[in-house]
Image (cartoon, rainbow, N blue to C red; front, side, top):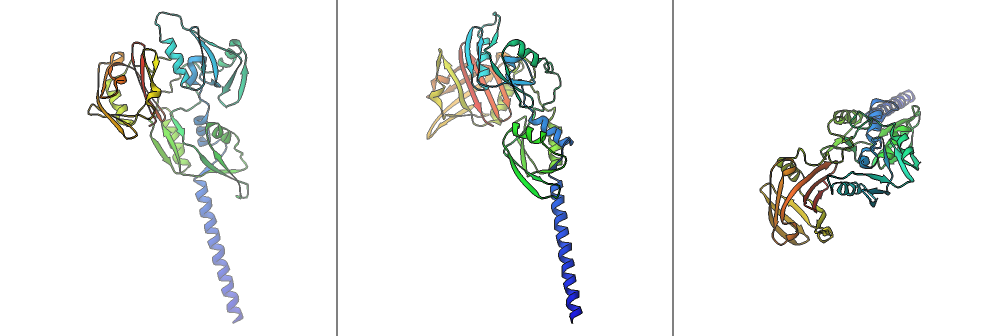
Length: 354
């Protein structure tokens, strides 16, 4: 009887040991699908995706590998303005576009702070000092390290394990700067896992769910060259030289709800009068405008090609919008779309977060 008890005890112990090892192996396998190692291909791709893109402010510094920290004061063709956010780059363009026969200039008021590709910062006191930094950038439209056709959707959570596979820390990554530093700080002696699933945003604004490291690597490699990174210095190249009415149809079909971003008529800013108004441009040529419980109906149509596309808007009860406008620009970036119309000095811009 005593021998039987000992035998049963040993069998139970063996079963517990086998189950424990099996569970541990399963956890390790699950972590392997989520593990990021230093200098791996996926780590390099993630770093390139999170690298600071310096092309957004090329209208000021003509440099893709660095950006100027905002706010910054510039003088454009004699007009001094403070750029508080990226919308201010459009203000610079608007001043430059006022006349076609003048010599345009953008003069920076120093000192400024420059943000490099790795998010480190440098104080710059003159054009000469800035030129030293910009000389390290690639020329416009040359291949550079950053990947701009895919973005991470934050926040993202990561777990850090020691050499004994014991969880030592959990970190939350809130933006590209955090992600870049996270990858840069990877230690070959530790194990780091991403808590999947995560989401990425593609160049067309759509999101993709990522369930493991291999899917993430594939998604970044697929998206890497899938869009125009706009790494040139021609601020007008996203205007309507190649626009078609089909482009307008497409953006209105893709983005269902637009708000008024800018409305200027006879030098009077009117956009604040239309905060909360939601415009839907239907593919049958009708417009629906909703503000709280109020609704307005109208029509829209577009004809012409390139920079000569006329957009006719007629909304009952909203006369500020009713006119034959010229399509000046269609812009679609990650998570944002904008349609800009002009008529002489009058401006009308619709914006959608889609």
